[in-house]
Image 1 (cartoon, rainbow, N blue to C red):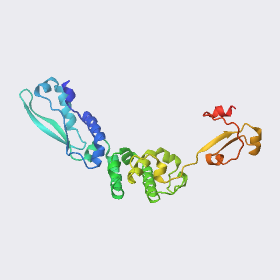
Image 2: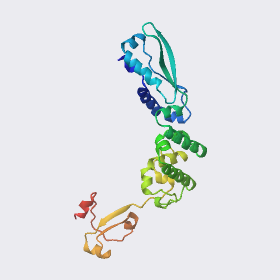
Image 3: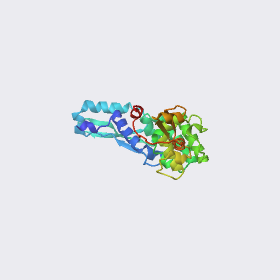
Image 4: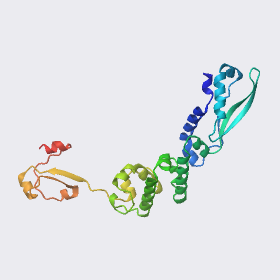
Length: 261
C-alpha cells in the first residue's frame, strides 16, 4: 500500500532504533557519516487525493514533533489541493541526537564516558571494547568498576598464584567472576596481546582448585587402615600418595551407581 512508505513519527523511531542498534559500535569508534537523513516519503498529488485524511494526520503528526533532529519541509503546488507544506525528511546531526530520539541518551553518554576512560588507560582495548554495548552502556556502575579494578590488578600481578577468593578486589568472588567470565577473559586476553585465549586461569596467573576424587572402600581391611572411613573425597594428588594394597578397582561415572555398591 502506498501509505506504507509514508513515515510517521512512530515508524521513524522504529527504523531509527534499528539503525542505532546496528551502527552504535561504529559510532562509538567515531565512524559513520553525519548528518543522518531519513526520507519521510512525501506523497504524490494523486496519492494525497486518494488518502487525504491520512495525509492530514501525517502532516499534523510531524507538526507536533518535539524530539531531536531537524525536520525539513517542502512546498508542493498541487492543482487540486493548492499549496501544501509537507515534511520531506528528518535530519540527525550527531549520534547523541539519534540515540536521544530512541530514548537512549543516558546509555549512550555512559558508553561514551566508559570508552573514553578505556582509551586513556588501555588504548589497545578501545576498538574491541566499543563493540560491547552491553558492558559499556548497560552494566551497573559497581559491576563496571569491579571489572576495571580486576583487570588493573591482574595486569599488575600477572603471576600471583592466588585462588579467586584471595583476590584483593572488592566485590569480586567466585560467583561474580563466573557470571562475568567471558568479558574478563576476552578483555584480559586483548590487553595481553593474546587474543583468542579462553583459559582465564592461565591468562590471569591464578591457581586452580585441585581436582578431587571420591572413593568408597568396600574391603573392611582397607577401611581399618583409614581409621574406619569407607567413603572419602580428597585431592587427586593426595589419593595417589596413599600406599594401599588394592587388588580390584571399580570406576563408575554416576554417583548413585557408586553408592549402590
